[in-house]
Length: 174
Ligand SMILES: [Zn+2]
Image 1 (cartoon, rainbow, N blue to C red):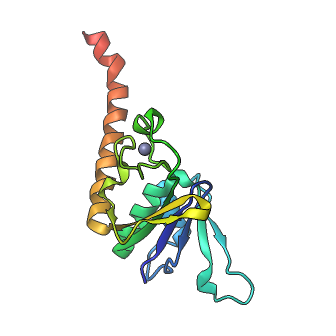
Image 2 (image 1 turned 90 degrees about the horizontal axis):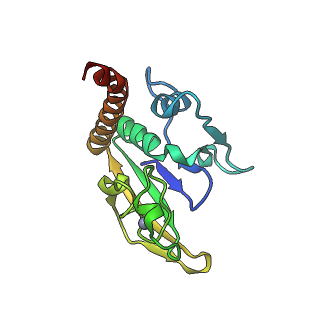
């Protein structure tokens, strides 16, 4: 079974159907912390009374969506990501100039910043839930793509740190 991340319009992301660790793999909680930083606080929500335990799920701060999705895809081969958007939220400069990856506007993230989720393959139909004014887009992230994205992101981070350290030094040598 492929696990599924749900990113609602607001609030934390949910990770459903994630398998337990095998062999000497770290616990799921450690996997999230390794990917997104020790400061994150993944919380396990148990299945409601009388429901099977596998209906429990993790909740994690929404800004960690990318790292969490990548870590699951790299361990398990792929992960599904169900992302909710507001069809009435206009796509404007706030979205297009954004640095992060948290877009819920009508563009479905296509115009968002550096289009972080552009590499996540859309699957199935986009569903419009009229009563709630919500649009649901399903994407899948596979291991190879997750590795490429993660490496690219780490390289950018390293370059930024190096540039920051180099900046004043180069000026004094100029
Ligand atoms: Zn937008």
